[in-house]
Length: 460
Image 1 (cartoon, one colour):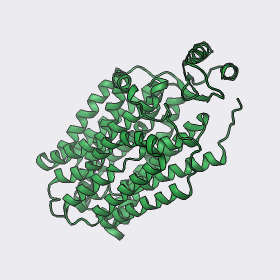
Image 2: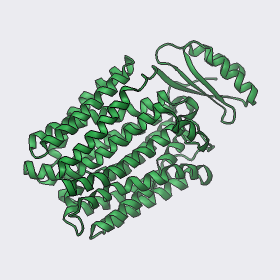
Image 3: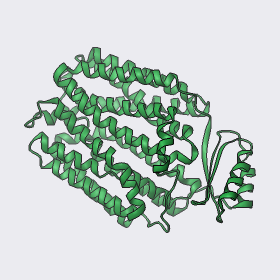
Image 4: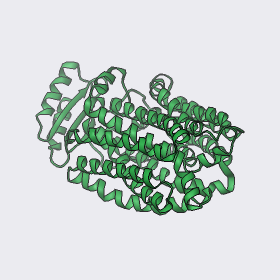
């Protein structure tokens, strides 16, 4: 077995192209966040913040319902077919929202957008097009693209709003989705073989194990709370910046740009310290504390411009650290053969947070005022902090995968797994004969890779 240190040109092309699919799609979706509430409030029905929240959250609801089914469908009907269908739905929803003359049609459009739930299918296609030892790099490219796109959107959304308005941004979103279809057709390679990947896809047989894991449940609540607070925040903050700062919505980017710059500068050393020094739990808990403080600041100072700016700065510092560390924690804590299922449940919970955060945040804002939204978010963060304090510190491990050059029967696979488990630094070893792969969870800094490779080459 020869392992290449570098991705092949095809793997790079596939990874970068699929990351661009995420980027094009997410750019259009994120751009409406900082401006939507202001524009929607001027439409028939938009005076009710509950409906504004429902419009923001409708995307997450249909996304949560269809994400895993779309992934399963991609096994049966083909990755690209499912991705085409999902992008077409997303484009359709964007154009429906673009033509809306009231909040109810926008809610419909947002729900159709969310129904284009292609995340699981895209992840499966990444797995089809990359070798096991390079799959983590490919997934990291996608994750990084989403983070950069989110930051760019907070600045681009308000700036574009003054030129093309909300309807124009919805139209641009639809066009980006159609462009993404062209990327799928002409740039992304067709996989030579398409099959199920335990590390990247959800399995119905593994759901019970994942849903009964208390450590994973803590993380799932965390991503739910994080994104519920995010949606709720964007119902209130645009109005607050306009009222307290006298800042037109099209110039809100002037607030977000320096805040995002500061938050990224502070995030990077925190994540590096947590990973390199095996202090991920400490960094994680500290970020939740900062997020709780940000929510309390919001509640107390939502009518004061500089209080809002300070709260936003704390919020985005914590948000970026938490958003980056949660997937890493999932990977470290999930059983190695159930990683794909754990990530699928995690993504679904995230979408549910977007949905319920919009509905609850909008209702609280409408009936009780903006401060109550952040009281609700503070309660979410306080409970998350309680759960995080009781979380076991994750092992300082990383996941490794190797392809078997020949098939093994069940007995030989079990024997190989037992032998690999005895290798220095191997914390968990699973051999999946049906997928012809070896899944290992190994010490981050000290494990005998050569001994493991020798065993795999001898028996695989």
